Image (cartoon, rainbow over all chains, first blue to last red; front, side):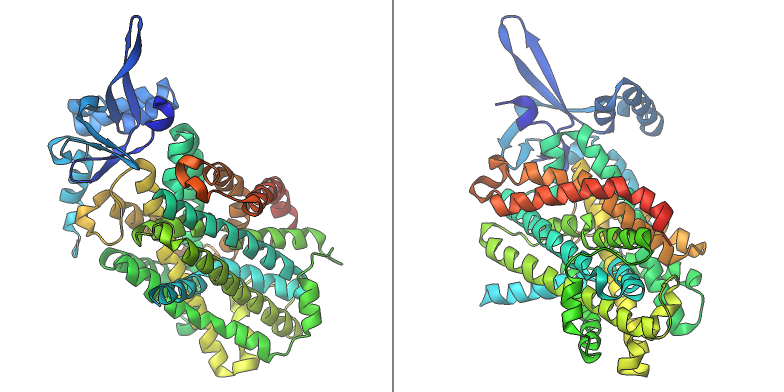
Amino acid sequence: MKLLRDLLDKQVVDREQVKIGKIDGLVVELRQGKPPRIIAIELGSITLARRLGAGPGLWMARLAAKLGGKRHGEPHRIAWHKVRDIGTDIEFDVDVRQTSIFAWQDWLRDHVIGRIPGA
Amino acid sequence: MKKLVEISLGVVTSVGGFLEVGSMATAAQAGATFGFQLIWAVVLGTICIIFLVEMAGRFAAVSHHTICDGIRERFGFNVFVWPLLATFLLSLMVLSAEIGGVAIALELATGIGFQWWALPVAFLAWLLLWKGTFGLIEKGVSMLGLVTLCFVVAAVMLKPDWTAVAAGAVPSLPAHDTASYWFMSVSILGASISPYLFMFYSSGAIEDQWDKSYLGANRAIAGLGMSFGGTISVGVLIVAALVLATHGIDQVDDYHQLPLMLIPVFGFWGFVLFVASLAIACFGATLEVGLQQAYLVAQGFGWTWGEDRKPRDNPGFSAVYTVSLFLAAIPIMLGLDPLRLTIFSMALTAASLPLTVVPFLFLLNDKRYVGEHRNGILSNAAVIFIIALGFVLAVVTIPLQIFGGT
């Protein structure tokens, strides 16, 4: 399997098939004398901004920490051993509601969208 | 039988969805100034969009990816960010133009200035997206869009010289206003080959859960639907050539000149039909472009998306179309001339084509996505031609805008 080609930028779903993001980054462990091993995937704006360059990455991390508090100053990670299925989408054995990945969507629902009639 | 119903419904949808403010305005302008001479641009644009739409549908049906997903996955985020930004900003302009089109129609109908209609129109569109389902948006609104067929009826009833019409389908050099001639041909191409159209189509294929069994239907819908749509544009052009020119209008620079078009054929009802066509066609496009904005962003970042879910289950998705519609209403509310905006955004659309069409060449030839259903020689020749055309358009648009724009 070619990591970058077959994993990066693919759709990620949780165990309920909820689309929770794309594989924005991969965390790889380099081992002496052995092939490198993926230990986690990263999702979210900080990882994406880092891909555009160190500057945007730093800027986005600061912005995220400012808006969402310290726990949002780091990218979201999902451990690779949670992976369940690699197909059109990549399924992880997690429940998005128990992560902070959708914290901003929840905020949006509670403070804006949910308050508009008919939502 | 079920497939036949599905195909005819699909054709109706694409016919209804084809004509929007861009194709109407550019075809009317071209007809008034150059008679039948620019019909070739409509024909060429239609052929190109048939190929792209067919490919977008095939890609979605076989790979279960939208075009947007495909571009991000195949080329990576750092490449994807360019078509994402370009398409988002351009669609925002097009959205503004469509809202402007509806607002102009309402001004013609009521006498109340178009600026006042921008917000109500955007609000109504938002309400339909907020409460409606994909089926309602796609089928209901485009059914109404069939009213635009009145242009074809009018074109036939005006008894044009059909040999001259056929001659117009072959490109020829203009006798006057060379820069304006080429600028108009660029805007017509931009109006016909709109990225939002094929991106929306691929999202629709996923919303309607297409699989490989839809490949035949897809081909029929793309071919017939877009051809009929192109026919309506040609109808607008013929009517403009025959009616506007004889009334001494050889330069359309104001929407208020246009209602005249159908009056010689249908009398007072011609006015009503024109206003209804403009309003419905542009409103349908407002819904589609608004929804496509949300599809684009949600698919690009991998959020949950789908028009059939409730907004509260889809906060990010609904926020994108809400904000887009509101932002797009602002320029019209401030009194920006909708016609100028339309022509300008159509020309820019043409210039942006390489960004969205180049990926087709890779995606539709990649076995990992489309397997045995990858492009044949004809489709690849078409994509390469459109890419070449796109690059030429990208280079010439800005100079032409300066020398030939209205």
